[in-house]
Length: 453
Ligand code: CTP
Figure: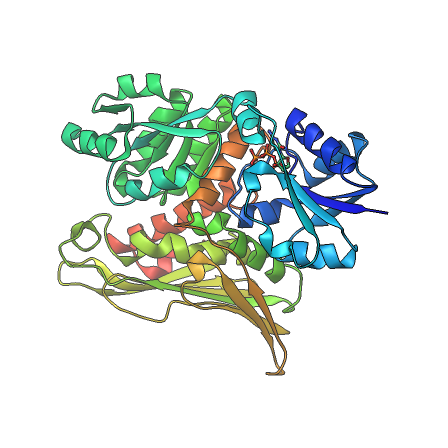
């Protein structure tokens, strides 16, 4: 009996898939089909798979050609499978020509001609109108966004707004965008969604204006500097049926999501303490060091460090206290925010003028999770216990600059697949805005004692 194997995502099952499976089956007597998991696809840069794994498996089964369906979830699995299943022929479409010679020591490799003019990518884009995204602000953060958006199918960054027209035009030329403008009304006509990457203090106003225009909003951190403003923005988004997401990229990256999941399984017992540190020495002439109202370590990097604290310990803290080392101009070079919870504590350390070890430490009654710098681009973390010989190590992919993960979730939500983000919720955003507000109150003269939650 000749055994044949083939693999694919088989998303939005189409004629090309059917033809491929039919011809694969005809190569032998028994056809095994490997269907990829979302996580595996994500790790190889294939974002925005629409159908669930169950549905994709069902569609492969319904084709009637597969004698056995298996799941592919890691690199290197094909080498294992062809040996394990005693495979005679490995086959895939001709788009993979040359990619699988490494299987030749184990079996015959056959490339079948690909069906022309159809692909899941094409169908994803046709099935759901492409989301036209406009960028508000064209500074340091915005330049990382456009190249990352290219990895997410179904979105197109087409325009940029900046009150300084020359900056917008430069940005549009650099990224070959259709439109650069300093007139908001012209901008709204061109876009379905916006990515806000303007100076911090303008986030709230732009987010509000965009939502009121019926646009979906992905807003750089911090979304707002007060709890009330954040609540108001989410209320408008709800009323209008629009997606509002705060762009804290770490929150959406696979390694961080896994780490939060593991922290919540009870592996390290009851969690008692979260310590998160992020520092980046910033030249003294940059906005972070000169903007007396909104610059400084905590407003700049506090969102990073508050993220794991709020995700793990929650928003229901009893008290938060801030301690800062100030620059001569009064902005904080380094800030420690310490939280007291009913049954736990947390510490955020952020710096623009003091360097420290950037690590994330989650301590529990049975062990701890340690993610070393750069934990905010989570690729690796360890779970450790009293017994130093016992260590669980977790590795994850973090592709490119990592913004593609938040963009992918944003698009996924706009397409209505997921009503709300569980990775970073409205409640999480509102809680972080509340902490920012307390910090700014203290900076403008409030006392620590007044800052109980
Ligand atoms: N395939 C094919 N003809 C097509 C599309 C896909 O023969 N028009 C084959 C691929 O070569 C592969 C299998 O079908 O062997 C599964 O492909 P998959 O990557 O799931 O489908 P695509 O439509 O290529 O998906 P995407 O656009 O997401 O890359």
